[in-house]
Image: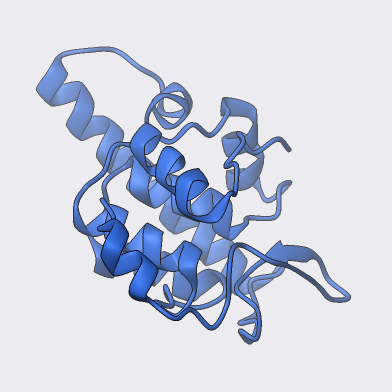
Length: 168
């Protein structure tokens, strides 16, 4: 949850999730950040996809054991992160280039610890940067364990960005 007065006092160097294209792929990252080899097909990208899958298995198993419910990993991600099953499948297989938008919804939806989320962001394009308004909101959503719907609403409220469901 963001404190409105505190947010308005902040001076952000960058705003929103910005597209930055290069010869390998287009991905969303705060302006002026250096790409860290997370392009489709790279070794870092493969490690990131593997890490995402491992976290999914762990969180889905936790949910199944505490709630005594049957749910597939893909449906679990769709329910808690608002990432469609087919997009998640393509992301894990490497047929979808991961975005910061995807990682934000994944990390907030699964209520990951900030350190664990930053590890994923670092593997993608760089840790959460509190001088960027979008990353600032992601950071605080992780810190206060916000619900995914509340997070999506706050992103829209403070940045005007609609976090539509990623479509591969």
